[in-house]
Length: 202
Image 1 (cartoon, one colour):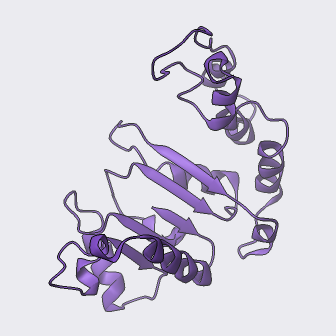
Image 2 (cartoon, rainbow, N blue to C red; image 1 turned 180 degrees about the vertical axis):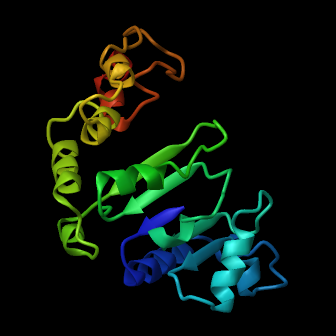
């Protein structure tokens, strides 16, 4: 799932993704080149449209024809999609809580999942305007932050909350420097910032 901040971004990203895919693989059946056979879908919240109804009913299926959904964040609200493995954000979410909820749509059944975040300087001016907490998070992640997960949880933690999860994240032990296998240590399995700090990648 690729989340965009604006309707225009949905259209632009959809065109870019489709143009990057070989036309022979864009449709599940080459003999039936119609919207319902496309592997990539685009949704930007046109209430009541036939396209909206199709994607809302089709994408959540485990055997869905649609393998990649490019959409505004409104698409995932209230829809149970159990097998999303990758979430992409093109632009800055409205708040840290919104971002956490949006990436939480991946890996709902406990399977491995990844989240990718892309932001430009212009992203902070897209409506809804990101709040101060989200802008602060983006600044830290592009600066000297050591762990994206810790930075997000720190933004969401208030006085009186259990901090054991965050404390355990700060005490993780990396793998040995001579790691030659595909690394499965706590750092390499966390975020790109942690992975850079692991001895096996240096």
